[in-house]
Length: 145
Image (cartoon, rainbow, N blue to C red; front, side, top):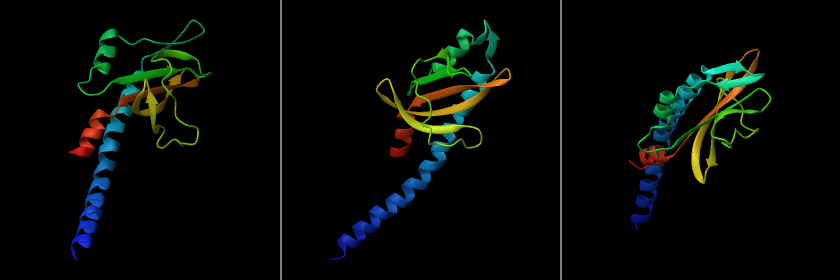
């Protein structure tokens, strides 16, 4: 007779322990994406009536090198024009408000779930957007462990 209430308490206890542990991990991984976005923004240069990303090949290779996840980025100009990166990487949904100057969101790209951030970057007097995303393999692993 005590088995169902004990089982319910165990499930509840597991949930109570699980969800608070996910938030710091999500925040830490998001901060990593934000840092990449801020760094990418420093490589935006004016040119030919618009903007371009002067990203050294070695930096691009290091950025995309990850043992577990695929990393994507996209730089969008002030008028919504593509500047560089992975074409079609989705921007944030309009209903999500920026917090501390950036937006974190879940989306899909190339048939995979990704966690993404959108960060404003200086483009002369206007603002460009830097989107950075990664697949969620490490995040899912952390949630399981």
